Amino acid sequence: MSLRKTLTAVNQSSLPPDSLISAGNLTVSEVSGSSSRIRFRPRKIRKVSSDPSPRIIITASPPLSTKSTVDIALRHLQSSDELLGALITTHNDPPVFDSSNTPFLSLARSILYQQLATKAAKCIYDRFISLFNGGEAGVFPESVISLSAVDLRKIGVSGRKASYLHDLADKYNNGVLSDELILKMSDEELIDRLTLVKGIGVWTVHMFMIFSLHRPDVLPVGDLGVRKGVKDLYGLKNLPGPLQMEQLCEKWRPYRSVGSWYMWRLIESRKTK
Image (cartoon, rainbow, N blue to C red; front, top):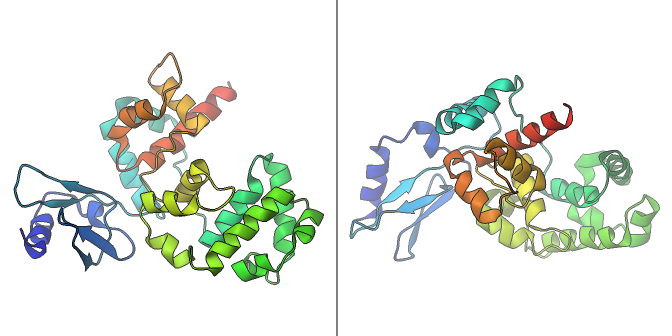
């Protein structure tokens, strides 16, 4: 089946309009590996093998940047998971994903906050920002490279984290990363590319995708809080592992980021009781 016919089939399908919206240029690839540029990039491509000519079904979801998008996510989760739906009903305040920092600044901030209490991390971050003309608006790869490890240690940044910041800035300077590339990458590409940076692991990338890029369908299977939330929500005896997390939370697609947000809230509510 030609790409023109495939896209026509998608347009005539019963998928809701919201499932076809996403930012950036998107690539649709058929089994042969050839690709054509279309206006939107799907989050997920499902191929139906029963048809000799592969059909491409687009199930993209827009970023969690507006209240209307979050509302759509909440309705989906309430209808697809009765237990999660009941949890959503008990929380008056819906999730908000409103970070407006550039990807580079968000990643630098993630490095600075690693393994520190929030108050101490914020203090160091504020000192870090004070080193740049214009504050946060002045944080660029070139300006970070211009700071020596000694400069960073003076404001409380460890030598190891200083090397992480410099490695991040270097990868921007040599073209391995850029804000523009990051915004266009798929979730899988982001994990592959960002974990090349020293000090950035899969968990950090998951948090970055959820809270900085507002990606709607991220499930941080290694996050202890989300795992504890899933354990409590479904009454499990033990903490679920990655595979069990994927299986249990499959019904949350394509809004697993929002489901994860409620797992954190569930654990927080248990601590206050």
